[in-house]
Structures are given as C-alpha cells and as structure tokens.
Image 1: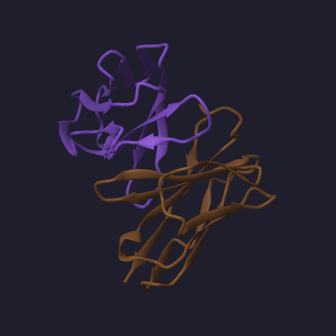
Image 2: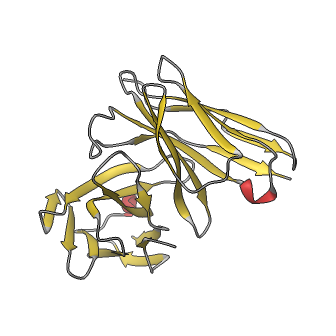
Length: 114
Length: 112
C-alpha cells in the first residue's frame, strides 16, 4: 500500500505571497490532518478533514485554510505569507472512524518564506 | 500554552543501555497517549500508544508507562540500539476526533 504523499517537498516563497500544499492519503483513509512543525514548538495541529468536512481546527489564524476532495486528497492554503510561516508542514491520514486510530504521516513539505 | 511538555530536548545513551524519555501533560481530559519517532527528512512514525485505563503497555523493546495522578508518561527503550537515534514525540488526545496535541520532542542519540 502506498504511503502518504505530499507535494511539493520544498518550497520557497516571499512575504505576502500565498501557497498551496497538497496531500494524498493512504488509499481508503478518509481523515487527513495537517500539522506545522517549527523548532522549539513541536508539531502543532492545524486542522482535520473527514469526508470533505473540516471536523477539527487548531489555533491558527484564518490565513491558514484547507479543503478535502471527494477522493480524500487534501490541500492546505496559506495566504499573505509571513516570515514566521517558515516551517515543515506535515499531513497525516487515518481511517478516521475513531479518534484512537493511528495516523500515518507523509514526509512533509518544507516551506521557506523570505 | 504547551499542554504536552517534553522537558529534555536531547538525550544520549550508550548502546545496550536503557533509554528513558519523559513527557508531562497538563490537560486532565487527555485519555489516549502515543509516542512517535521521527528521522530527518521523514514524517513521524507511530511507535506505541496507551489508553488512560492502563498504566503500562509493552511492544518488544518499547514500553510506555502512564502515571495519571502525576500526569506523566515515559517511554523506555531496552536495549537501546544506534538505529533508535531519532527525535521522539509524545502526543495526547481526548475523547472525540483526531485533534492530536504533540510535545516538542526529545532528540535521542544512541552511541555505539
């Protein structure tokens, strides 16, 4: 079974621009979660989608948004980029039926904002 | 407000010895805990979990202990191997959907 894939793997943007990141979950998984990893902050939960609906949301500003398509693929968008948005963005997928299901992570997209 | 804390950013252990990684949490609503391991340039991989109804869970060389009264969990790796060198994250969930709260991670180095 193919794992979680994320594209692109690396991205360089400038302040004020917007960016879209993509995540393809493991086949059959309906839940996709997004996390931001920065040094010293660990992984911080952004949001979770299940069957095209946002089920949970972390404490990030509205510049961070996402969506999920009918094939469970998900995209995350960050508008008006700030220097502090430089981070590793990880997505994880699971079956999503119970909260204790194991999440499987992709390799991440490293975003650098200049 | 960091609800899950890993106070040791790094740990070095000799090969063959025990590695003990610690994690503290503040939210008493957390009822399921996990440990993930992360190598550079890879996403975290699930290692072991424990429900709040248990105080110990074992899987091969890995054992997780949970002390609910102290709001503390620990991961024991015995014996430690050089391939265990990675960043370890503890994580917690409360009843409901998958909104996972992660700690800041501890970088383990196992010295051959």
